[in-house]
Image (cartoon, rainbow over all chains, first blue to last red; front, side, top):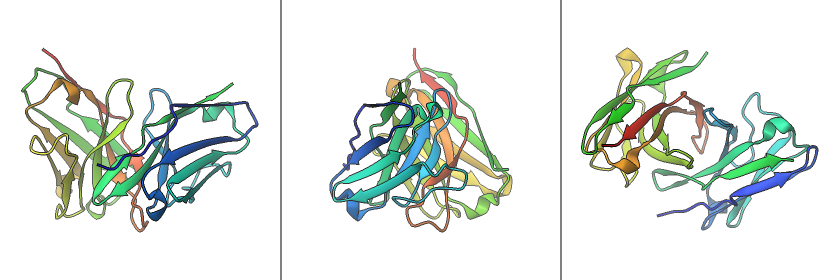
Length: 106
Length: 121
């Protein structure tokens, strides 16, 4: 089965840039999207189709996807961005989520 | 405003059954594919099942295939998940989620608040 691997945790200082990677076999040949989940809340879509932002998502969230790695970048990270982040892609007709990354804003 | 409200969760013994419901409002339910996604306590997201707008296409994760059945009633704006032969590892918060249309990778653009299913003796 297809697997998407993320680092368990990423730490970032307020105002700095956080990069979260998502690795999978030939992931760059697929589309990747990203979800943010704050404690006790439901997931929220923050990036789709590799790099597009849904309405209402701040411009500091951006995405890229090439080779075997998709990356979610948070520029000028704010305290409110502290959350778990999950990448997601497709394997045939099955939706696959990444292992998740906890972003801590120190 | 798009709203998805799950119900039907609770405590069930191993081997038992449970039926989850998701009531949708604020959009034309019959035009959208829907998904169920679950999250075990303290764990990550796991996709469970999907159903197309007219129920023509249905898919399941290997972990639930043969035990869970997804269905929908477009007249009632409702999505369902019938869960049979439940196991301890099915313990999770179950979310229903809408599939975004007209987008190549069909992400999940709206999620419900989730309903907790606990399988324990």
